[in-house]
Length: 437
Image 1 (cartoon, rainbow, N blue to C red):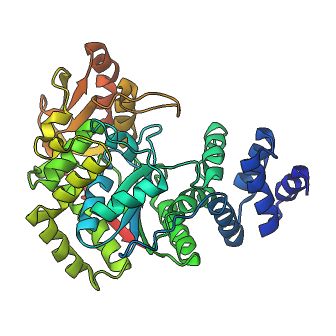
Image 2: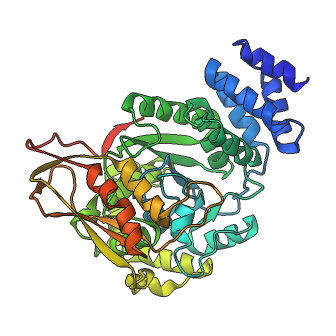
């Protein structure tokens, strides 16, 4: 069947068969479809829609465009967590060692940051020597030794997704739920999981900002996971302000290490709390614990005993990084950075944060990438000093920029100041976990 026939069928609003979707994905992978034909069909899907059957079919075709991990020789339930991306969203670095210490095997395949959100791989690569480019065989060796491994997507994992995502990004067709589902789930299902927990963000720092749309995405992700035999649950979590204290790669790893060491301050409690909730759901989904309450008790024990920290230390060593950062987290921070405070220009209560603007500001000084080929300065970042609902006085510090040059601070200081809204009335507080699907 020629590409033109499949494109015309979807252009006219008809649903595609499993075979037609398979032909499309084969063409993406083997070069049989030109980029302009791929984008024509993706745009037709975006405009005319896809039903649940088509969504499952494209997920399956993308999944089977590559290799599915065989982890059957690892004698532990396999579980993972995936986040749809946010600002200061660093929980993976806490969840993986905790879950491993609790008895799960975690084959975490992560991504890099793009736009205003950070990526787990960029955070990991701020650890001196840490190698995220492992083969399947090496990943299994690491998992058998410490319970988890954290790697990037390889050419063997859902290769169709890499090209499709790049073309969707270039043609403004990223924010469409069936294609988001196929992109996420084709990679996660390739891990050979027993259980998956999804952190679906909503609010000003999320890719999908409306709660109703976030809830719809969560439902579709869970339905797709279950269709492939994986116990799947989604937590819809608030991204109306940066998560925790720090934004920026090395600073976020620093925050995670302080938490694992039991040294986190009050501004880091959101990060810890969400990490515990997500991990507890993982443990229940993969049947290590029967209830969330029992799972949380298990988690508290491995945090208190230091077992979770030791798992992270062992993983860092196995993946080529410097394990000494577990003893001296401050080694991650570049002392020569300029520290520029962002000052409140009025008094009242902090009522709103433009979280997208905060993430983009860190990106603008090198802490993230606008294009996939951009480099990243792992050292720069931002620390949040105030949270929504806090009492403010004119002259108070809203946060601190960590940058290389004063010109960088000059570039983003006004943007950051304008990202904070201060009003006279105490705002309504919002729950961090807004719903479970």
